[in-house]
Length: 69
Image (tube, rainbow, N blue to C red; front, side, top):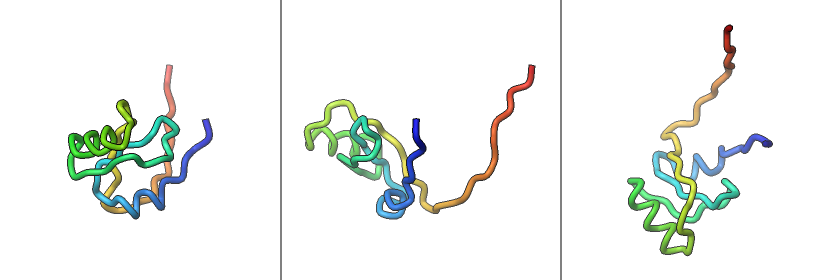
């Protein structure tokens, strides 16, 4: 799966809960709580959105994961 650049989305919805269509790109609702974002999405016709929270500040992360045996 190709990585998504959510920089613009994070700037626009800083600190909010965001409901997305299953394409993970289209915002269908937002709110200060999960309930508000979910209600907003349902009002816009999306019954089962993907819910995520946008950070208050955009920060860089450089790192990785290594599993050891």
